[in-house]
Length: 353
Image 1 (cartoon, one colour):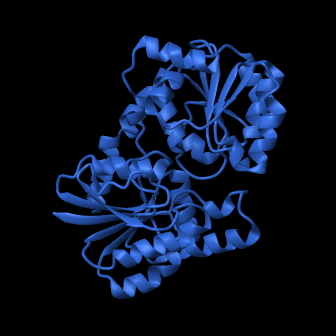
Image 2 (image 1 turned 45 degrees about the vertical axis):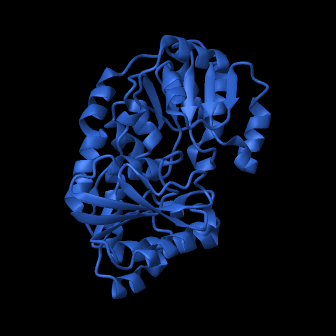
């Protein structure tokens, strides 16, 4: 029985983010592996002692923002002994890794996530620190995991190290709900079945929310946009500007999978504006629904969708795509089923452990 510690998430049960979904779905098959997931007591409302057969250990810090650095370091300190493998999700605590490697005999696997130091939300000092943390993570890991070929190519060119490429699963987004419940959700948002476009993301500049909203406003396309609008000045400004448009519904974050299934399975289009990072979980999940996917034209999104989606670079090109009749994309569903099921992802991770 291999003992594996998972570090770098808020914790499980998952209610936020791709790393949390990854940790939860890994623990759903614990044959041959005994998982321990380190969780934030500040972020997790319910303090379970175990979940999916995995042990849960709590750190009294938040897993987000600048607290993520001491949070990950404290988690690593608590995992110095007793584990065969440490799976580190993200590079926040990598500044401690050189010391960890001197003390611990555990194998270290690091999923470096996207290229955090390129995200617009960070200032110059934060970007410099994240770049330094990334370097420490790559050079102190026994195995580096990249979630996208674009990220893998970056690691090879930047550090001369070949990572293991493992994406995310998305089939957990498929649910079974009644037509009554689906229609009730659509009524709540004021949208009609297959008569609207959908976007779901964190409201941050690198996710190009302003482009999506401007294109919807100019084209008249019915848009349901779900996100954390009140988290930043950027989000609050966009919400204030576009709430006046009758064709645009700006909605608060949703973590209930049944509600998300109702809107995803009912949308004619999914608009994905992410420009940074690697394989984005929300895009992978959307691929299982077969609606038309319009994605921002960067290598990560093209790699994720295998060039099967349609792509935009600004509000003008997105407006033009919205002017055409939406079309289903069954070939994207086939690709998702062959590459992005959690069973497949678990098998790849277990081979590392």
